[in-house]
Length: 79
Image (cartoon, rainbow, N blue to C red; front, side):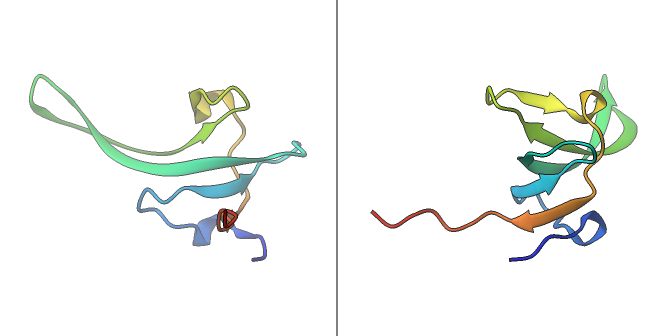
């Protein structure tokens, strides 16, 4: 697969590879579209990408630049 612009990435929780500006590594990430509620009241809608870093710790995008491109994850090797 080829890199595609981030606007065309799936927004259904599918894990994909993303490219970040100014970084030379790609990361596995998922798009989240959630409603944050407090005490059962309707809350604000938040949309953001979350990435797994090299230590496999889930990080919020507030610590990362926004992705510019994506591609599907490759198939795992056959054993």
